[in-house]
Image (cartoon, rainbow, N blue to C red; front, top):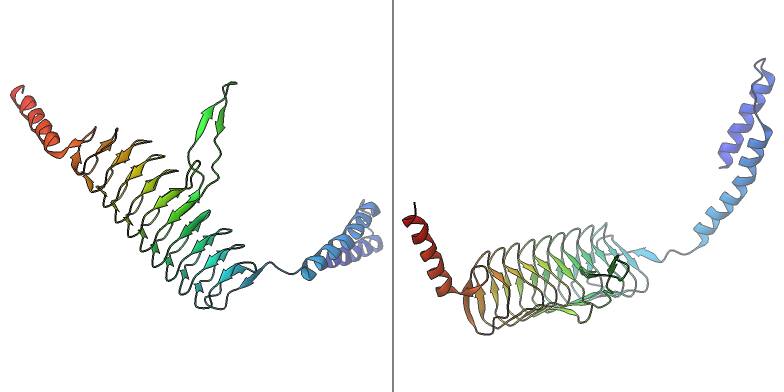
Length: 284
Protein backbone atom coordinates (compact mmCIF):
# COMPACT_ATOMS: atom_id res chain seq x y z
CA UNK A 1 0.00 0.00 0.00
CA UNK A 2 2.87 2.38 0.78
CA UNK A 3 4.22 1.79 -2.73
CA UNK A 4 0.85 2.79 -4.20
CA UNK A 5 0.84 6.02 -2.18
CA UNK A 6 4.42 6.85 -3.28
CA UNK A 7 3.62 6.27 -6.97
CA UNK A 8 0.42 8.33 -6.73
CA UNK A 9 2.36 11.24 -5.18
CA UNK A 10 4.97 11.17 -7.95
CA UNK A 11 2.25 11.13 -10.60
CA UNK A 12 0.58 14.14 -8.99
CA UNK A 13 3.87 16.09 -8.94
CA UNK A 14 4.54 15.34 -12.62
CA UNK A 15 1.05 16.40 -13.61
CA UNK A 16 1.29 19.65 -11.63
CA UNK A 17 4.58 20.58 -13.34
CA UNK A 18 3.32 19.80 -16.83
CA UNK A 19 1.12 22.05 -18.92
CA UNK A 20 -1.67 19.44 -18.90
CA UNK A 21 -3.90 20.40 -15.98
CA UNK A 22 -5.93 17.26 -15.33
CA UNK A 23 -8.54 17.21 -12.53
CA UNK A 24 -6.62 15.27 -9.89
CA UNK A 25 -8.38 15.50 -6.52
CA UNK A 26 -6.34 15.75 -3.32
CA UNK A 27 -9.13 13.92 -1.50
CA UNK A 28 -8.25 10.71 -3.39
CA UNK A 29 -4.65 10.89 -2.22
CA UNK A 30 -5.77 11.62 1.34
CA UNK A 31 -8.08 8.58 1.18
CA UNK A 32 -5.26 6.30 -0.07
CA UNK A 33 -2.83 7.65 2.49
CA UNK A 34 -5.27 7.29 5.37
CA UNK A 35 -6.21 3.74 4.39
CA UNK A 36 -2.61 2.65 3.97
CA UNK A 37 -1.80 2.95 7.67
CA UNK A 38 -4.70 0.69 8.69
CA UNK A 39 -3.76 -1.85 6.02
CA UNK A 40 -0.12 -1.96 7.10
CA UNK A 41 -1.13 -2.36 10.73
CA UNK A 42 -3.51 -5.21 9.92
CA UNK A 43 -0.79 -6.95 7.88
CA UNK A 44 1.60 -6.66 10.81
CA UNK A 45 -1.00 -8.12 13.13
CA UNK A 46 -1.45 -11.10 10.78
CA UNK A 47 2.29 -11.69 10.74
CA UNK A 48 2.52 -11.51 14.52
CA UNK A 49 -0.49 -13.82 15.06
CA UNK A 50 0.69 -17.46 15.34
CA UNK A 51 -0.74 -19.81 12.70
CA UNK A 52 -2.94 -22.61 14.01
CA UNK A 53 -1.62 -24.94 11.30
CA UNK A 54 1.90 -26.22 10.76
CA UNK A 55 3.70 -28.28 8.12
CA UNK A 56 3.99 -31.98 8.88
CA UNK A 57 7.53 -33.34 8.64
CA UNK A 58 6.53 -36.57 6.83
CA UNK A 59 5.03 -35.54 3.50
CA UNK A 60 4.66 -31.78 3.82
CA UNK A 61 0.91 -31.57 4.49
CA UNK A 62 -0.72 -29.24 6.99
CA UNK A 63 -1.96 -30.22 10.44
CA UNK A 64 -3.69 -28.34 13.22
CA UNK A 65 -1.61 -27.95 16.34
CA UNK A 66 -4.37 -29.40 18.51
CA UNK A 67 -4.44 -32.68 16.55
CA UNK A 68 -2.73 -35.83 17.82
CA UNK A 69 -0.62 -37.49 15.13
CA UNK A 70 1.74 -40.42 15.51
CA UNK A 71 5.28 -39.56 14.34
CA UNK A 72 5.18 -42.40 11.80
CA UNK A 73 2.11 -41.03 10.01
CA UNK A 74 2.48 -39.54 6.53
CA UNK A 75 0.49 -36.48 5.44
CA UNK A 76 1.23 -35.72 1.81
CA UNK A 77 1.57 -32.18 0.53
CA UNK A 78 -1.82 -30.58 -0.12
CA UNK A 79 -3.58 -32.60 2.59
CA UNK A 80 -5.04 -30.89 5.66
CA UNK A 81 -5.68 -32.38 9.11
CA UNK A 82 -8.01 -30.26 11.23
CA UNK A 83 -8.31 -29.65 14.96
CA UNK A 84 -8.48 -32.45 17.55
CA UNK A 85 -8.09 -35.19 14.95
CA UNK A 86 -6.24 -38.38 15.87
CA UNK A 87 -3.99 -40.28 13.43
CA UNK A 88 -2.50 -43.59 14.52
CA UNK A 89 0.82 -45.14 13.61
CA UNK A 90 1.65 -45.67 9.92
CA UNK A 91 -1.45 -43.84 8.74
CA UNK A 92 -1.04 -42.45 5.21
CA UNK A 93 -3.05 -39.43 4.04
CA UNK A 94 -2.95 -38.68 0.28
CA UNK A 95 -2.63 -35.28 -1.35
CA UNK A 96 -5.75 -33.15 -1.46
CA UNK A 97 -7.45 -35.06 1.35
CA UNK A 98 -9.20 -33.20 4.16
CA UNK A 99 -9.45 -34.80 7.60
CA UNK A 100 -12.10 -32.84 9.46
CA UNK A 101 -12.19 -31.83 13.12
CA UNK A 102 -12.26 -34.63 15.74
CA UNK A 103 -11.85 -37.42 13.17
CA UNK A 104 -9.91 -40.49 14.33
CA UNK A 105 -8.02 -42.86 11.98
CA UNK A 106 -6.60 -46.14 13.25
CA UNK A 107 -3.23 -47.76 12.75
CA UNK A 108 -1.97 -48.45 9.22
CA UNK A 109 -5.06 -47.09 7.48
CA UNK A 110 -4.44 -45.66 4.01
CA UNK A 111 -6.46 -42.74 2.65
CA UNK A 112 -6.22 -41.87 -1.05
CA UNK A 113 -6.24 -38.56 -2.90
CA UNK A 114 -8.97 -35.90 -2.66
CA UNK A 115 -10.90 -37.69 0.05
CA UNK A 116 -13.02 -35.92 2.68
CA UNK A 117 -13.44 -37.44 6.14
CA UNK A 118 -15.67 -35.63 8.64
CA UNK A 119 -17.70 -36.64 11.69
CA UNK A 120 -16.29 -40.16 11.61
CA UNK A 121 -13.99 -42.72 13.17
CA UNK A 122 -12.02 -45.14 10.97
CA UNK A 123 -10.57 -48.38 12.30
CA UNK A 124 -7.22 -50.07 11.78
CA UNK A 125 -5.73 -51.50 8.57
CA UNK A 126 -8.47 -50.03 6.39
CA UNK A 127 -8.19 -48.57 2.89
CA UNK A 128 -10.16 -45.57 1.67
CA UNK A 129 -9.67 -44.87 -2.02
CA UNK A 130 -9.65 -41.62 -3.99
CA UNK A 131 -12.61 -39.26 -3.86
CA UNK A 132 -14.48 -40.93 -1.00
CA UNK A 133 -16.71 -38.68 1.13
CA UNK A 134 -17.55 -39.84 4.66
CA UNK A 135 -19.57 -38.08 7.34
CA UNK A 136 -21.50 -35.45 5.39
CA UNK A 137 -25.15 -34.74 6.18
CA UNK A 138 -27.70 -37.32 5.13
CA UNK A 139 -30.64 -36.59 2.83
CA UNK A 140 -33.39 -35.87 5.36
CA UNK A 141 -36.15 -33.30 4.84
CA UNK A 142 -39.78 -32.70 5.74
CA UNK A 143 -42.53 -30.34 4.61
CA UNK A 144 -43.52 -27.78 7.26
CA UNK A 145 -47.04 -26.55 7.96
CA UNK A 146 -46.24 -23.49 5.85
CA UNK A 147 -45.42 -25.74 2.89
CA UNK A 148 -41.65 -25.23 2.98
CA UNK A 149 -39.12 -28.03 2.66
CA UNK A 150 -37.15 -28.08 5.92
CA UNK A 151 -33.94 -29.93 6.76
CA UNK A 152 -33.90 -32.56 9.51
CA UNK A 153 -30.95 -32.35 11.94
CA UNK A 154 -28.01 -34.57 10.95
CA UNK A 155 -25.70 -34.47 13.96
CA UNK A 156 -24.30 -37.96 14.57
CA UNK A 157 -21.33 -39.85 13.16
CA UNK A 158 -20.00 -42.63 10.95
CA UNK A 159 -18.13 -45.57 12.50
CA UNK A 160 -15.96 -47.62 10.14
CA UNK A 161 -14.47 -50.86 11.45
CA UNK A 162 -11.11 -52.57 10.96
CA UNK A 163 -9.88 -54.03 7.65
CA UNK A 164 -12.57 -52.18 5.70
CA UNK A 165 -12.01 -51.16 2.07
CA UNK A 166 -14.03 -48.35 0.48
CA UNK A 167 -13.87 -47.81 -3.29
CA UNK A 168 -13.40 -44.56 -5.16
CA UNK A 169 -16.13 -41.89 -5.08
CA UNK A 170 -18.27 -43.75 -2.56
CA UNK A 171 -20.36 -41.61 -0.20
CA UNK A 172 -21.32 -42.54 3.37
CA UNK A 173 -23.67 -40.16 5.21
CA UNK A 174 -23.55 -39.56 8.95
CA UNK A 175 -26.46 -40.52 11.16
CA UNK A 176 -29.42 -38.49 12.36
CA UNK A 177 -30.96 -40.74 15.04
CA UNK A 178 -28.23 -43.41 15.19
CA UNK A 179 -24.65 -43.62 13.94
CA UNK A 180 -23.97 -45.01 10.49
CA UNK A 181 -21.85 -48.15 10.97
CA UNK A 182 -19.66 -50.19 8.61
CA UNK A 183 -18.62 -53.52 10.13
CA UNK A 184 -15.16 -55.10 10.21
CA UNK A 185 -13.77 -56.66 7.02
CA UNK A 186 -16.55 -55.22 4.85
CA UNK A 187 -15.54 -54.40 1.27
CA UNK A 188 -17.28 -51.64 -0.69
CA UNK A 189 -16.80 -51.05 -4.43
CA UNK A 190 -16.68 -47.73 -6.32
CA UNK A 191 -19.64 -45.36 -6.61
CA UNK A 192 -21.68 -46.76 -3.73
CA UNK A 193 -24.19 -44.59 -1.83
CA UNK A 194 -24.84 -45.42 1.83
CA UNK A 195 -27.49 -43.28 3.46
CA UNK A 196 -27.72 -42.00 7.01
CA UNK A 197 -28.37 -44.38 9.95
CA UNK A 198 -27.41 -47.46 7.90
CA UNK A 199 -25.83 -50.34 9.80
CA UNK A 200 -23.77 -52.83 7.78
CA UNK A 201 -22.48 -55.97 9.47
CA UNK A 202 -19.08 -57.60 9.20
CA UNK A 203 -17.64 -59.25 6.09
CA UNK A 204 -20.21 -57.78 3.71
CA UNK A 205 -19.48 -57.19 0.00
CA UNK A 206 -21.12 -54.27 -1.84
CA UNK A 207 -20.49 -54.12 -5.59
CA UNK A 208 -20.42 -50.98 -7.73
CA UNK A 209 -23.35 -48.55 -7.90
CA UNK A 210 -25.21 -50.08 -4.97
CA UNK A 211 -27.63 -47.64 -3.36
CA UNK A 212 -28.74 -48.10 0.25
CA UNK A 213 -31.39 -45.72 1.55
CA UNK A 214 -31.50 -44.42 5.11
CA UNK A 215 -31.94 -46.55 8.26
CA UNK A 216 -31.31 -49.89 6.53
CA UNK A 217 -29.83 -52.73 8.57
CA UNK A 218 -27.68 -55.41 6.92
CA UNK A 219 -26.55 -58.51 8.76
CA UNK A 220 -23.16 -60.21 8.45
CA UNK A 221 -21.80 -61.77 5.24
CA UNK A 222 -24.35 -60.01 3.02
CA UNK A 223 -23.42 -59.73 -0.68
CA UNK A 224 -25.02 -57.10 -2.92
CA UNK A 225 -24.49 -57.38 -6.68
CA UNK A 226 -23.96 -54.36 -8.89
CA UNK A 227 -26.69 -51.69 -8.89
CA UNK A 228 -28.71 -53.32 -6.11
CA UNK A 229 -31.11 -50.86 -4.48
CA UNK A 230 -32.50 -51.15 -0.95
CA UNK A 231 -35.37 -48.94 0.21
CA UNK A 232 -35.31 -47.15 3.55
CA UNK A 233 -36.01 -48.82 6.93
CA UNK A 234 -35.52 -52.34 5.56
CA UNK A 235 -33.67 -55.16 7.36
CA UNK A 236 -31.68 -57.81 5.51
CA UNK A 237 -30.72 -61.02 7.33
CA UNK A 238 -27.17 -62.35 7.51
CA UNK A 239 -25.80 -64.42 4.61
CA UNK A 240 -28.22 -62.98 2.07
CA UNK A 241 -26.97 -62.63 -1.51
CA UNK A 242 -28.74 -60.32 -3.96
CA UNK A 243 -28.41 -60.59 -7.74
CA UNK A 244 -27.36 -57.55 -9.73
CA UNK A 245 -29.99 -54.83 -10.32
CA UNK A 246 -32.32 -56.27 -7.70
CA UNK A 247 -34.47 -53.99 -5.55
CA UNK A 248 -35.33 -54.78 -1.94
CA UNK A 249 -38.69 -53.32 -0.90
CA UNK A 250 -39.37 -55.29 2.30
CA UNK A 251 -37.49 -57.16 5.02
CA UNK A 252 -35.56 -60.28 4.03
CA UNK A 253 -35.66 -62.39 7.18
CA UNK A 254 -34.11 -65.63 5.88
CA UNK A 255 -30.64 -66.30 4.52
CA UNK A 256 -30.33 -67.25 0.88
CA UNK A 257 -30.14 -65.92 -2.65
CA UNK A 258 -32.61 -63.32 -3.94
CA UNK A 259 -33.20 -61.43 -7.17
CA UNK A 260 -35.64 -59.30 -9.12
CA UNK A 261 -37.82 -56.27 -8.52
CA UNK A 262 -39.15 -56.65 -5.93
CA UNK A 263 -36.54 -59.08 -4.66
CA UNK A 264 -37.81 -62.64 -4.16
CA UNK A 265 -36.01 -65.96 -3.62
CA UNK A 266 -33.77 -66.60 -6.60
CA UNK A 267 -35.55 -69.76 -7.80
CA UNK A 268 -38.91 -67.95 -7.79
CA UNK A 269 -37.38 -65.04 -9.72
CA UNK A 270 -35.95 -67.40 -12.34
CA UNK A 271 -39.34 -69.11 -12.76
CA UNK A 272 -41.01 -65.72 -13.16
CA UNK A 273 -38.49 -64.69 -15.79
CA UNK A 274 -38.83 -67.99 -17.67
CA UNK A 275 -42.64 -67.77 -17.72
CA UNK A 276 -42.43 -64.19 -18.94
CA UNK A 277 -40.20 -65.19 -21.84
CA UNK A 278 -42.52 -68.05 -22.77
CA UNK A 279 -45.53 -65.75 -22.63
CA UNK A 280 -43.99 -63.18 -24.98
CA UNK A 281 -42.67 -65.90 -27.31
CA UNK A 282 -46.13 -67.50 -27.67
CA UNK A 283 -47.78 -64.15 -28.38
CA UNK A 284 -45.43 -63.13 -31.19
